[in-house]
Length: 67
Image 1 (cartoon, rainbow, N blue to C red):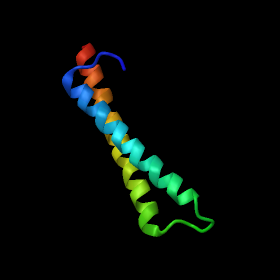
Image 2: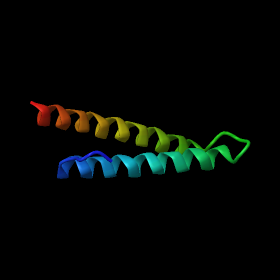
Image 3: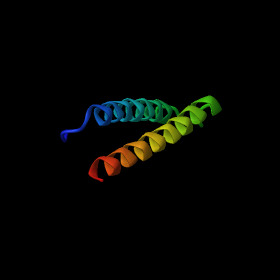
Image 4: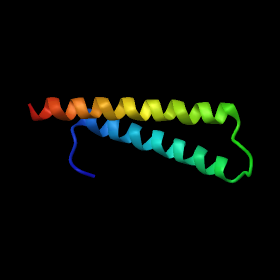
C-alpha cells in the first residue's frame, strides 16, 4: 500500500471493507440458481453507492494534498 496520510489510510481501509462485504454478498448470491432476494440486491447496490462515495472523497483528498 502506498504511503497515505492518516485520513487517506482510514478511507482506504473503509473502501477495502466495503468492497469485501459487497464481494461476499455477490459470491453468496452466485451460489444459488435463483435470483437473489430483493434485499440482497438492494444491499449490493447500496454498497456500490457507498464505494463510489468513498472513492470520490479519496480522490478529493488526494487532489487537495497535491495542491
